[in-house]
Each structure stands twice: as C-alpha cells, then as structure tokens.
Length: 237
Image (cartoon, rainbow, N blue to C red; front, side, top):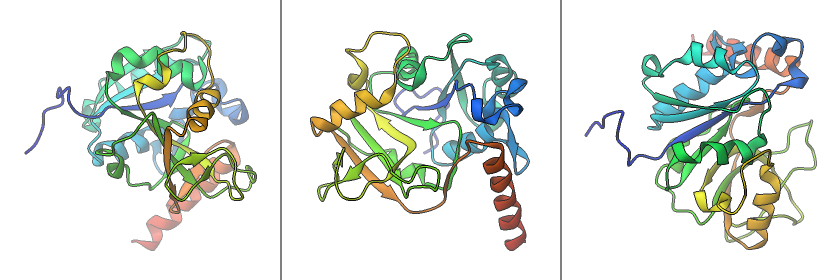
C-alpha cells in the first residue's frame, strides 16, 4: 500500500550539508559543497534520489555556509518525490553532533538515518529501514588511501569496537536514537566523542559494506567520481 508524504510514522533521514568544504576551495567559495555536480546532478540530489528509492521520503537537511542556495535548489523536495525540511545553522556550522542536536525537533522520537552530504555510494539504504538498534548503528567500509588507519573495528557479535586488529572507516552512514544526544547541550559538538562513549558501553552495532563508496573530499575526487559514473554509463549503454 502506498503511503502519503505526511506519514509521521516513517523513519526519517537527515543529510548533513553544513560543512564549509575547505578542501574543495575555490569551488566552494561561491557554491555550497553539496551542490557541486557530478554525472549531471548535484551531489545532494544523487543522495536524495537514493533515499527516496529506498523508501525514505521525509528528509531533513542542515546547512550553514551559503545554505540558502540549497533551499533554493531543492525547495520542498516535491520534484524529487520527497518532503524536505531544513535545519539552518547560520554561517557557523555546529559540527556533526551539534547539527543533529539542532535538528532533533524535526527528527522525532524514533530512530533516524543520517547520511553525510559529501559521499557517493551504492549502499542499499532500504536495509536500514526496519533495523532495531540500541543507541547507534554504523556502516563501515574499507579504508580509502587517504584514511589508511581506519576508525573502528567490529567484533564477532556485530558490535562496533574502538580497537581490534582490523579497523575500517566510518562511511558517514548511520542510524541513531535521539537518546544518544539527550545529555549533550546545544552548540558546536563533534560526533566522535559521543560515539566512542557509547561504543565503550557496547551500545553501538555496525556492519561492513564492501560495495562502492567514496568520500568526495577534494576537487580531484570529484573529477574521479564524475569519470567513474561517465564510464559506468558507457558500460551500460
């Protein structure tokens, strides 16, 4: 049965789009990083289309630097089949946890999905829709060349660990419960320390994804991504 866009019982998704994109300069001096294009669409449009295809229709987007351009570009989200709400932070971004805390009134009381606005992936987001979690569930990937040390490990029970012989990179895709943030005051706050405390308490699960994933952190990687999609399109033509 098809659901309407105002169904408040569906899992919500948040796209983190408030970063300044310093490593992308000068491209990001006049355009926010999530609006930089590859394969004919803005980075954030690709993510929105993937989320909608996976059944995530209620999307919250935070923004800071040049954020009004994001609202002008995406509007209500209707043209993408989504219902988009915005969580503006002003010119000073609040970091990941701070941005999520600022958006909690829009995210509700149930688990929600958060996706970094500067990644490209073919991860099947629908897998996460009905997952029962404790405080958080992280998607980990193989370590890219620019981050060889990784972030977290996984134990045999599927819990994320902060040590271990093999570490993977946090993909920027995670499920969270509002309770993870409840004791943290509003303001500029990084996500890492909150996650590591919850990991130490064994309240974070995770999974390893071995498919396509890229952190679009530099102009060179943006070019590589565009080339990847152009070639893939030729291969499927």
